[in-house]
Image (cartoon, rainbow over all chains, first blue to last red):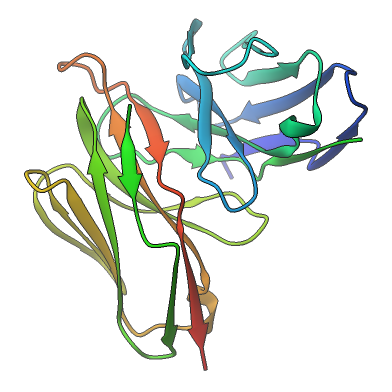
Length: 113
Length: 115
């Protein structure tokens, strides 16, 4: 089945230690998104890639970076995780236009200790 | 910015009908989505409206009024498995002619279905 895969499902990192979350897709969608979702809150858009074009949300902290080496993969790098960065990180993909829904991965739950 | 508002919690009994409302204020509106999210899982797509009116899909229907900035999700014949958070999300495009959009979510409505 075509899908969006996030690894790992659970990630524990130390305060201040860089961490990378990964997302891959077999849908061949040209847009990939990263969302942060804290407990009982709405998913918050961090940034998205349209093909290789990177688009940052204005309020995304500099501590968060992203890479998309090819159509299938996208990475979220947190340079110096703080306790406030503990959250579920969701990757989503879409095609441009129409009624296409955004397909989400199962998420990576990040714990900062 | 985007302002998307929906009730925090709702409860209903099995077999009943429930309506979850969503209001929004945004510029560059280009469609409204409803997602279902079970605890600890990713959101799953339920419905999409871009024009005014009702879209029906089995037990789920969604309505949109763009002039009022209002949508609702209607769930019929409720089942226990429908207990979940329901997220209203608005797609926003910077360029009127573009359909490349950013999807912004409301906080979600936690629905509990009782037997």
